[in-house]
Length: 239
Image 1 (cartoon, rainbow, N blue to C red):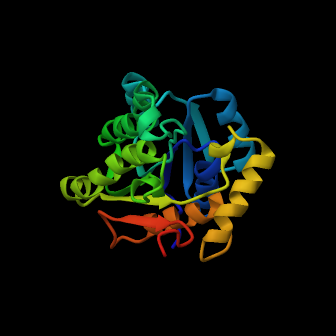
Image 2 (tube, helix red, strand yellow):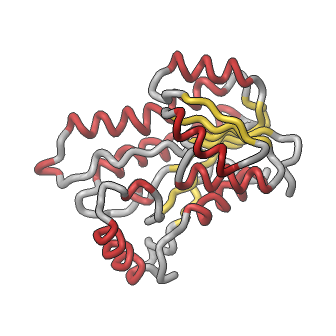
């Protein structure tokens, strides 16, 4: 299915899953608008995308900035929110609640702020796709905070889909994906951890941003799916 003459907005579209999704949408013929907090990252991403893409620096945690952004860009067809936060990990005994609050600010509240502000200009029968994470439903020690943030978003998907119909509302829940989310680790640490995860997965590799981007593109194109959370995790829930 072609997306020619359709317009997509991606929050968090300057790296990782967001940038891969922007590339996939441009290749499918869509006009893409990317939004991210740092103007330098927006400029670098636009160099990669080369054509059919524009971008603006927007702080997704600022309701005022987000509202102004949507008023400025006008009508569009599809919204993808790939904003992420690596904050919130830790075992219950030592979990820093102040850090977890920041994690909710950076992902849960940011997703909610963007989704709310988009509704006046998002096509009524278009699509809204969120990117959550496998931590929402995967029982991993030390990941309860991450799971709480992503689980809170996933819990809202069916209600949004019922409330906003015919707008289609879905989420993609990635597993371990090779993105800048892991940049707090050294290259050696990342590679060792990714190898460990890959050995445990049925597909015997970790995911790439393009894997998730293709899942997002599938949801945008399939007009008969709404209220769903689609796993893209290499089979990590298979025991």
